[in-house]
Image (cartoon, rainbow, N blue to C red):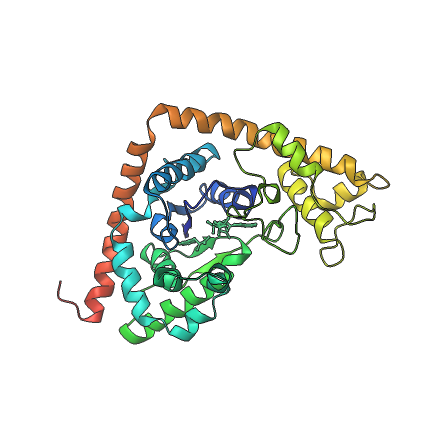
Length: 326
Ligand code: ATP
Ligand code: LTN
């Protein structure tokens, strides 16, 4: 069975962008792959986090994984900070990474732009991500398109290590779906939908109530025409809505175009909202049950035990090859 690893930062409330680009893939892959899904809390602290909020958001992402259908009997679900090998191999990978390589990372450029002071952790973030992935010998990494550049660096670092110290790490491939690889903001279709967008109208949170979802879609920016056509270059807003609709309704985009031919954007927006609500409502109900059940801690502890066993073995192999005394 091929191995899969991915993670999401507990840096805020998850959006349908995270669901579409990441979690939906996780759920699909767990039946056919050997899967490791983590909550990357060590990555989240690359920007300042309030301790109380970090605790809450970490539990929230873990519970949302389970509520969305990740089954801890099938996939290993764990917190990055509970597997100390990430920090050690992260440091080792940092020493293999060139400053120039990190300077080219667009996520770093975006997140540091206009900031008065930026922590060094934000800069070396991709080296830690590379360690996350190679520790589990992952073949495939399901992510949204924004992570492609980090995956390319991971591949380079794995190859560099193997070249220098002998074959040690699997060189992973990103797993990026065609439809839904980059869901855009509902307000500005030139920007990615992001959980840290200061305008909540730009995203649908996984926790939004039905009426909020209806309102956000009805206010979503659209062009001044009325033709419902998938054409990302010329009609980015409508194309984004069609992608979201197609994913939540499981109806192909071409069928949706035919269904709404001759109708304005209003009908489309109303129906998208209902399709999204019908998927999110049961997830939200399961989320509440999981939070109330008090089972989360034990699930994460079991996950960390399994993850530690795999990660420690990889770390040991790598350190031995590098000349560390063990
Ligand atoms: P932030 O806004 O804090 O940077 P984010 O919403 O981009 O966060 P991450 O934790 O960085 O979320 O991403 C988790 C996963 O979700 C990644 O695989 C990422 O590619 C995917 N993802 C995030 N936003 C989108 C989006 N708009 N479309 C598709 N995939 C997305
Ligand atoms: N960089 C990713 C989060 C992340 C990740 C990983 C994703 C950290 N480690 C390992 C896949 C595999 C992000 O910002 N979304």
